[in-house]
Amino acid sequence: MIRIGNASGFYGDRFAAVEEMLTGGELDVLTGDYLAELTMLILARDRARDAGLGYARTFLRQLEGSLGLALDKGVRIVVNAGGLNPAGLAAAITRLGDRLGLAPRIGYVTGDKVPAPGALAANVYLGAFGIAECLSAGADVVVTGRVTDASLVVGPAIDRYRWGRTDYDALAGATVAGHILECGAQATGGNFAFFTELADVHHPGFPIAEVAADGSCVVTKHPGTGGAVTVQTVTAQLLYELGPPGYLGPDVVAHFDTIALADAGPDRVAVSGVRGSPPPPTLKVGRNTLGGYRNTMTFVLTGLDIEAKARLVREQLTDAVGRDGLEFVLARTDHPDADSTETASALLHVHLTDADPARAGRAFSQAAVELTLASYPGCTLTTRPGDATPFGVFTAGSVPQEDVAHVAVLPSGERVAIPAPRRTAQAAPSPRPARPGPAPAGATFRVPLGTVVGARSGDKGGDANVGVWARGERAYAWLHGYLTVDELRKLLPEAADLDIDRYELPNLWALNFVLHGLLGAGVAASTRFDPQAKALGEWLRTRLVDVPVALGAAP
Image (cartoon, rainbow, N blue to C red; front, side):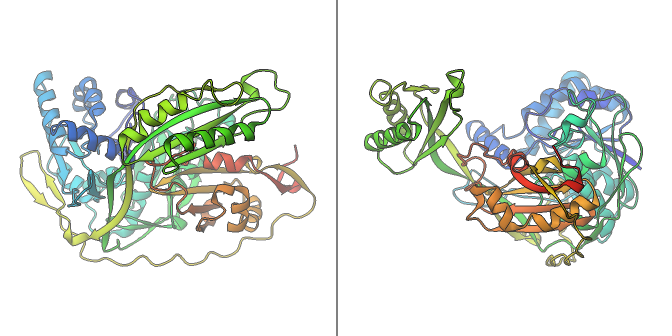
């Protein structure tokens, strides 16, 4: 097997994780995922200011203290920290090595940039064979631009086992391993619905996948680190940012409804049975454009007549700056007969977006401040007047695989073209699973849904997903029958008018819902209180439902 660890789930993750993973136990490869849709926008703005930037500079600082250690231990490093400028990051690592008296062999993967007039950045999601090519040529460090998150794990496995393009089941198994690892400590107890049941979640370790030649793996973590690896924590991560069970990738379609999980010992979960099929003929393209400028001012409304106070502010600001682009969100955080000013108060968030930075900037924020002595009783704000900030809009598209110039640049400087897969296929819908056995009947208790199920949610462009799983077969039988799309709309009123897809994953005792359009134009443009839908699942778990007493849901 090959032991592949992860040390970063996003740009800003635990800085010390690289060193922790290198010193905490045995590894063959250390990966790091630094990119997300919002990150690509941040890097695009960096590069607009300085053409030499466009990569995750945090990784370079992490490497400064860990490059020698990795080389000494023979641990190879594979990261997508190259962002919009993998060649620039590779050159920076070379300079770092020179300064440290080291000579790392560095490869990088490029070709993800595609023409898109008017876009700040437009990048395809490349696959894993370019990474494997660099590793096969002896690279100690491989940096990439926009590849799929799972490719960081799939590439080293391809290199170790010499998988070909049609080894679909093995590629699919490694893709699932990559999906489990890609968000770091989310697989080891971080952000876990039942975190209060874990012994130690204060400083969870980062995950490791021991990937075998057939693509199966065991998920674990370094001995003595915090958190936990259980069937439940792995299930939660499998549901994160998931769409249909046929998980599309550039190298393979991994069928998540074939995954089998089993307890393999303390902090060890076996993942097996994953089936794969040919990849789609197209690659996903993420396009970031400048959407305009925005600003937010927040009013504190205290005591009586909250709705009337909010209405007065709405009318006054509309008169001052005009209606276009204004959005008012009243958060009723107030309580009756409260014992403090804070608990007696609601918050009125006022957002303004506009193509004109002046109107969205001081013209708006100053108009809000000028109401302080001329509006509702007790008028105060939590924000100061300020300028507007630019925001981006993310859109997803596709391009034919053969139109993309996927290139591996080897440590020698040789450039190797990575051909598109010869065999592709449109992903077929997953067969409808058999209905589960009968659900428990009898008396019920009205309790929060989260009493009996876990949830994990996230963003996919303008869409959001929420995966919900039960912790036993009988609970899944109830969940399967109860949580329909119509019922979800009732429990989540924000989604009442949205198109929602429901997918069944009985192998995980889970349902996955995709809420189309919940996040509007994407994370960077969203004005939702929870712009990345990270808390959507936890909100769902608070909703009161009638649960059979037989499931042990009694208060």
